[in-house]
Image 1 (cartoon, helix red, strand yellow):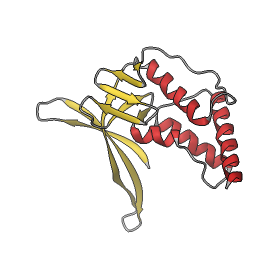
Image 2 (cartoon, rainbow, N blue to C red):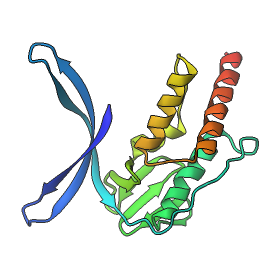
Image 3 (tube, rainbow, N blue to C red):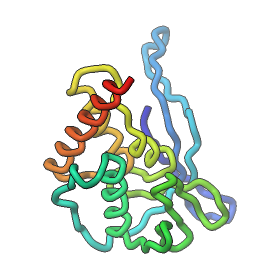
Amino acid sequence: MFLRSKKRINPSGKTYEYAYWVANTYIKRRKMPKQKVKQYLGRVYRFEKKRNREIETIDVKKNNFKENIILLIENELKNYGFEEKEGFWSKENCTVNVQQGLCMDQEGKNICVAINEGLLHDTTINTLISFKTKEGLEKEIGKQLGNSLISAGIRPKEAVFINLFHQIMKESKINDHCR
């Protein structure tokens, strides 16, 4: 599945952008792919990037995987001019609560915030925060983690990604031994 955004013109003539989760299926008879919308995500809000600060390193001994993911997301929100107040990150009529995995407008509707080449949404935040390794090779797990980060618009430096990967692998092995 992947994220897709579409622009729509409303009756007043204003153009708005909306996001969807889309899945591909291949139709053998017609020998072509077909795309099906799996979930409507909400209106997409785009903001200009105000700064370009990247996190150089993460402390895998001090913070767990979830805490490091939250730090990366909050850093990107700061880069786009969001301001934090009591756990909520806001800009104009957009509000993001990273801890709870919520993105909404002032009316309480689900929204997406365009971050780099990805979209920050309830689903992408929660996918990252609750990332679980699935059975498979380390290469596949790394690819899943990378895709989850990119979908949410998070592009960590290589060293940060490697530390996140090692951290999630270590935490999943600890959880496997506890079962």
